[in-house]
Length: 299
Image (cartoon, rainbow, N blue to C red; front, side):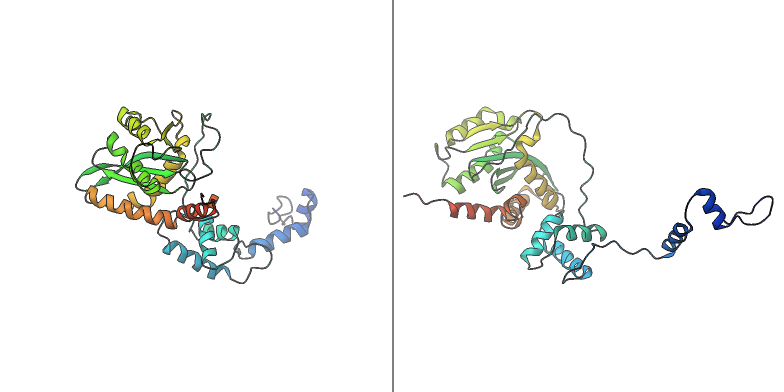
């Protein structure tokens, strides 16, 4: 405005006159002009930077993301893995550097939710108290779409059983449960798993007479989730998400046998290396070992 020519005097209005009419100070105008001419500096946390500069820490973050056997890990798990390697920094600094360098995982947009039928927690306090089971699908080049069944401990988040089959029948759905019972209770037999509850949805495999009869024979009590409330079976659902993001969606399998071998290998990697924040960034297997070591030995 100060550079505009007056219609009557054919002269510029000038900064002083414009500031007087608008009721602002000339110092504010000059300060804004000076700030606009300065090059934009990247945002940084106020205060001392710490012993490791940002560029070196970004290299460490890239190394962690490259060496990790999993995909889509957020800044919290990256921060925890840095601590395991001896690099000490803050979560917010890791979050800022991952965001500025395009290393953050794409989480998508949340969708609004209606009233919740399930309100509370499904996390048990001790291992082998409640397991969750569910199924998903995978694609093979020879056999086409096949079924994948899982069983997960609600306390440790450990995968206790995993199985792939050509058909998603009730008998195949029992396989990961049998694997878990054999590994945790010694054998498959009558009432060997008394005290264990099994969370499942209302799929035809899990509500069938054969499935319910066998888990009762094993001593397992059925714990169906609320209808249309997948969060009630959230432990198995969350594991399936991890399984898809790190195996089923990133690899190609020829046959169901190839998929089954890959699932067994993934279960071992997940149980030993996947970090759980609520466990103090310990793996599911490490949490189980720590809890079993803390329990008193029976006389």
